[in-house]
Image (cartoon, rainbow, N blue to C red; front, side, top):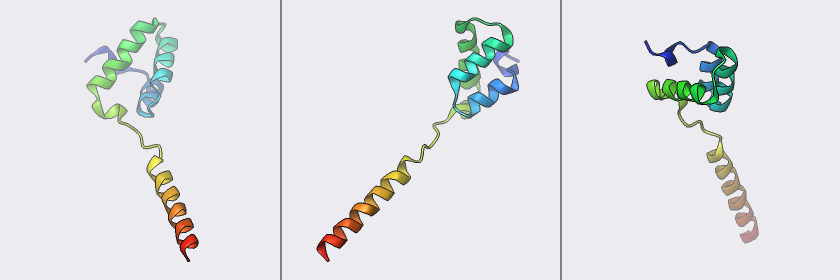
Length: 80
């Protein structure tokens, strides 16, 4: 078992939510670690658990679809 596998729950939750900086801050506060040590532990956790920090969809695709629909409607109205 490695040091990164026994992180406090709030640190793991922050990592899983994609909030790496917050996770580092929480770990520093919980364990009294320096910035470098906390970052290393968080990075190690992410490395050991690849699914821990997958890119999160921000809904950008939906925005593009809505904009295209509005443009199509405007074009349709202008040709009608």
